[in-house]
Image (cartoon, rainbow, N blue to C red; front, side, top):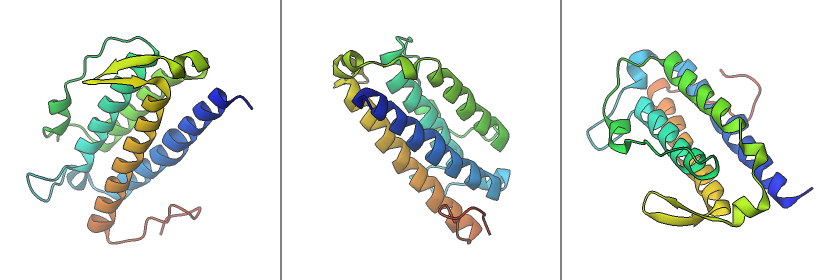
Length: 163
């Protein structure tokens, strides 16, 4: 298999098949109130982490590889949005997935070797993909940890059913 296609395949597996599934399982376990719970002003709620992941993924992937204008308002991702319910958060992620699937399979080796301006960085395309996988996984772990604290049950990500 071509290395570029393998990188894209792994991106989709790590983000959509692993992290998305885990985030959705966490959301299904929690009440609407728990999704927006924050232990203190220095900790983010699960809802805010999801908004942050959406903004980060769109900024790093869509504005780089698909040439979309970067309209991200990062600070807004961390302000409370308690009017957004769990289904709305899931829908945001599913819409983002649809957006990415429109162009991600068209990424070629030259796109991975090209440099892009993202935030204050100049990054190679391959570094962008690595960053997004790492960043998404990091916050998915935080979401899982918060869920376990609030729900006091195992998440069983490695079994077929949840307790």
